[in-house]
Length: 253
Image (cartoon, rainbow, N blue to C red):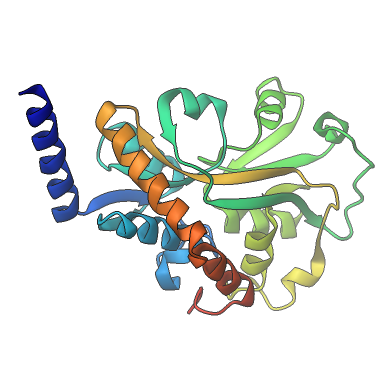
């Protein structure tokens, strides 16, 4: 009887998942995620296809990143895409298998001398920009909290890059691909990218994940997502999406 009941409940849950779209909070971080990008960007394209392989439809709700996380926390959405590794978040949320890899670097003006550095505290004479809601590294957050790094927060990456160009901040850590694409966009004056360079030493290497609230039902749902993601890797779809990203075909309008 118990075995029959468990099977019936599982079938009911699977039928619900197939019939109802999962609402996933997300934000703008081109070319990885974006409402105006084809497929919603590389990461959200992967998220949609991985769930589709498991018979689950999804819909994305675009919000500022801090609100995207809060909507997951308060149950307004079933999942959130996408977030970097963070031990604090990992205590509260379920993390998927890695979806994407990101090399974050320090952007700065070419005419701003940056001293040789081995650790972030070596740069305590400079002003950093940060974007509200982002994870960053444990070291960066600790140094900022202790007042050992001067960090100014802004609402989005565009504002931070404009502040960098204007000399209001000295350094801005950002995904290398995202930063250069943004600087070359219509959001900036022509030639803005010629005024900017990056540090060779990476700020961090991060991995993007889908997040869900902790519960037995979500643990099963996350397992299905990871299974779908594994199928994309195994049949070459994930690599094809990655090639699309780097060739610039099918990822932007």
